[in-house]
Length: 128
Image (cartoon, rainbow, N blue to C red):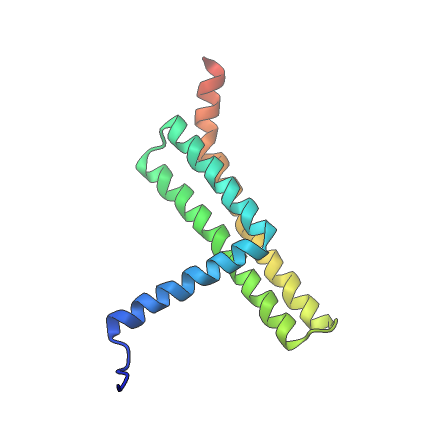
């Protein structure tokens, strides 16, 4: 029996499967990604508790996505660098440090955005 090439829809579904497989692999291997997911869960729970506005949810959602994307890119870069340069090399270390710096920038940006969103709710809570 001759196998037909996958259809357009099947290829798209396969792409989603590969992406989810990659996210799961990173989640299993990267403790920092697990911390980001745990932190995001806490922020989302707090957001429901204080009743964020739709625009505030947009800020929080984009911030969470930014950090997760940075961490996933960092993980992918580390894997590729380790594949290409299994031994210690100054340029390999530099590439990893720069990628880690990108995660730090994303995390600090998200933290500032979170503080700006949640600060008024904290003030209101303290005034009660």
